[in-house]
Every structure is written in C-alpha cells, then in structure tokens.
Amino acid sequence: MRSTSSTLLSHRAARTAAAVAVGALALSLTACGGTSDNKKSGDDHSGGGATESAASVTLPKLDGATLEVAAVWTGGEQKNFKQVLAEFEKRTGAKVTFVPAQDPIINFLGSKIAGGQPPDVALLPQPGAIKQAVEKKWAKPLGQEAQEQLTKNYSQGWQDLGKVDGTQYAAYYKAANKSLIWYNAKVFENAGASEPKTWKDLLSAAQQVYDSGVTPFSVGGADGWTLTDWFENVYLSQAGPEKYDQLTDHKIKWTDPSVKDALTTLAQIWSKKDYVAGGPTGALQTEFPASVTQTFTGGDQPKAGMVYEGDFVQVNIGETKAKVGTDAKVFPFPAVGSTAPVVSGGDAAVILKDSEAAQALVTFLASPDAATIQAKLGGYLSPNKNVPNSAYPNEVQRTIAQALIASGDSFRFDMSDQAPQAFGGTPGKGEWQDLQDFLKNPSDVAGTQARLEKDAAAAYGGGS
Image 1: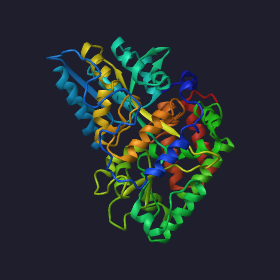
Image 2: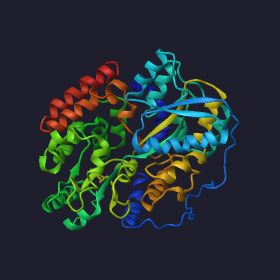
Image 3: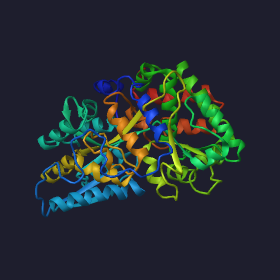
C-alpha cells in the first residue's frame, strides 16, 4: 500500500472538508427511505451528458487479443463486473479472463509477477497500493485515450488519487460511500424505532430494537476492514477532519486522547454482548457477506436489525428476498460530534502489462459506458460524473450516487486504505487485528491504543 505518510500529501486536494456533502445526503436518504422501486428508467437527474443507449467511447478492434484482469471482488460484485468485461469483449473482439485475487492484493500481484504471470490490469483498492505498484515498477502510465476519459468524466480529486508524482497511473472505476447504516424496515417498525441522526439517537434506537426481541447490530468482525470502517466514521465525526488527516498520516500517535475517545464511543456498542449478533465471539466468526444477509433473512426475527457498511451491501441484500428501499432501508452514519461523517473508498484500474488492449480496457473502464452497465446491476457506485443517475436500479442507490457526485472533492478517503499495507490492509496484522482484539475485549482501550501505535510506528517507519 503506502510506504510513508509523506506520500499522501499529494492527495490532500482530494480530501477537503468532510461535512460538505452530508447534509444533502442525509436529506435525500431520509426522503427516499420509504420509496419503492418505481422510478422510470428514463428519468435522468444526473445532469451528466451521457445516455444509457449510446456508446460514448470509441474502442479499437482487438481480435485475437487476450487479457487478464485481477481484483479481490467475489460473489455478486465479481459476477456483475464480468458483465462489464463481456461488453468490452463484444465491442473489441478481445478475450478477457477475470483472475480472483486475495487480500492484500499487492502480495498477490507480487507472487504472480515473480512467477512471470502478472495480470494485464489490476483493480487496486487503496491509493497507497497504486504508489507501491509504481515504486516497484509494476504499474504503467495511462495513455492519452484513458486520460481523456478521466478529464471528461471525473472531478479533479478522483483524478489526483490515481496519480503518483504527477503521472496518471490509475483510473478509479468504483467508489463507495462508507458512511451508511442499513436496517430491516420491519424490525424498526415493530420496535417503534426511527432513523437516528446522532450517536445518542442510534443508541436509543438500538435499545428499542433490543426491547422488541431482536439483536440490534450485525458486525462482520471476521473481516478486519469492517471494524476499521466503524472506527473511521466515529473518529472523523468526533475528532474532526484535521485530526483525521493527522492520524491518517501518523502525524499524531494512536495513543492520542482523540483515539481514546473514539474507542470509548465504539465500546458503547461493542461492549454490550446482547447488542451484537452472536456476541463478540460470534461477530469475529461472521464474514462481511453473512453480516448483511443475516440482517435481512428470518422474517420478523432476523439475527440483527441493523448492519453498518457502504452502499455496496446492496449486492448482498440482493441475495435475500428483501427489497432495497422497502424491506431494507438506509440512513447516514449518525453524527458523533458536530457533523456526520463522509468516508469514501474506491477501486482503481492499473495497467501492469502495457499493450493496446490493456490501455483500451482502462479507457473503457474510465468511460460512462462501463460504469453504466454495472450501475444498472446494483451494489455499485461510480465516481464518474457522467453516468446517468437513472442507471442506478433503485431510489436509494440513485440518491447515494447523486450525493457522491454533488460532493465533488469534499470527502475523506478511507483511513486504513491510506496506511501502509502492514498496518491498514493485512488480515491478522496491524489495525485489522488490533480492532478485532478490541471487539473481543472492548474494555481494554489503553491496551488497544498501545498496540495500534506500536504497529503503526513500525509500518510507517517509526515516525510520528
């Protein structure tokens, strides 16, 4: 991922005040929370110039060309992305094979490259992973056609996140709004609970759900990244954007009082065994997909009433009988401090084997054409501002997409995704493991801080 905190300074323009977009998001999500999926497909409120029927990018004929594309996506995400690749094959005549990767993807790619079999293109989920691929001389600069698509379709902040030392190496294909809590509408109705605006309101709603006989929260603790997302939202809202940036760059230590405050706040939920499905032990054995599906199966008695995670959970909800916008609703992550958080993530396409076909694929992925295909399939959010808003399959997703585009560059990128890989992106190590240990023992705030700081200092090279 990233080797030092100084490498992140070039991304500061992409992560200005976090509160700008949240007001519109909160209003739009609340307004659409009970809206059924009945919007006409032709109703385009995106303001973009793309249409769903016309191709907006010209691709070369590539008959006989073969490509491998690697990403960590599984399940519905992988299935939907393969439909995008199928369209590229149809237009160009190339043959594209999807290669399932494992976290951390840099290690996966390193083994493939060492074996002389690197994929042509990889989808990297962290800004620092892009830089590391450049430092290792794996990544190839994007060509003129791909850069033209980026200039036409992306805000400057999203373009800059794919640059290293001023050169464009990556095109962000997928974005995520990671400041959402999804809830079982029937559970909330039975409990008499309403969508909370503040952390205090969230605790009250959780108590109402608990009193109705349903465990309030589902937590996918087997995947450490879900726990870092919990922390980041609490920390950003409580400590503020400036502190968030300082901690992201390890300019302040994890022993800082602001981290103590955030962990103590998290413990208000995590320390209540009856508030988390399966208790801490069960949560630590629950992988992310199951944490979502168990919230929306079981009729009036699911295993939990709420699950925190980004817009992409719609893919997992789609595997149940629940309907987004009716059975499964969503509200913005509540304000812990003065403003609610806006945390984003994303996956960027990087070329590892330069060729006309690889350049054409990334050009396609940077166009509205590719993103529109996957937008229609659900569980996907594009940073491409020229994707028609009507392409998204339900009102909930349309409002989330509108809010992302309207926010411009006013977001904070996922903190752990900007940390060195050893700290912020490796299963069983660093922040992932430290927060899993904290979920197991939420009373040990000081010990957790000490472990986080020790791991962060080692990963960032000892500096603070």
